[in-house]
Length: 338
Image (cartoon, rainbow, N blue to C red; front, side, top):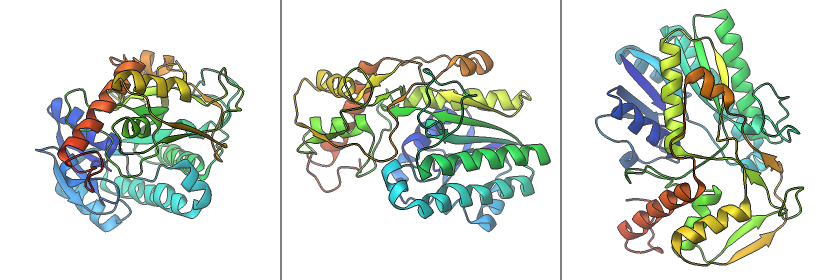
């Protein structure tokens, strides 16, 4: 049997494909390459360039490759952009997910793992945030993901489909073996931006908001290494294969760091200082988001192996340096293509 990974040419998806291949799984990747890269899909995974919302194509893939399970990453992820262009997010994240779920039901796929987000919680007063906290997203991005969770729950009650929705906190870092990393141009991930600034790709970086109710006034987030996140999906797949019931799990370490603390970690990893400019808050950013992770540890047996901010920063920086070298320098026009 084969696993279909949508968005498998992107940052998190490519690490998932590596994890599956390392475990001996057969993998098909469906990606429209709007933000992903062909080179990011490792062999022997089979890449199909196409859109997850194309129900005819998806049904053909599910049948031809005897797909056992779907791991769904494809979608749009930039919170500020979702505020200014909400319909894009409801189309890419909700409408297309509905089409994918429908294709899965029609083809008899019984296991579905969904890439959700901590943005479904909004400004939760409980720290760390448990999975049963009230869901009050602050952005169309968070709402679009929550809507897909609701569709999955309703579909699972009506059809022979079981799912796991994994609510990511802040994903960072890169494959420790240097095989993949965050390569998207104009990425908005904090550690990615700080790493780009450290290698000279950006002249400076900005901190958005210094007046939050946190120890240093900047947003506090729970940063999870992308390889540990991929392992969480592998654990979810094993859980569903054993007959586990549909469920939702946070993916984080239950420890938060402020924006300024993260920047200092990147400076330590690089041994360099760089310019940091303070700017006003962005719409849709909650002050603090830290994962309650007891449920995923106890139910799925997941145990993080890379839960260290300095290690996460070092791996992200090493990947950024790799991109710069392969592009002929930090200012090369193809800095995102190794």
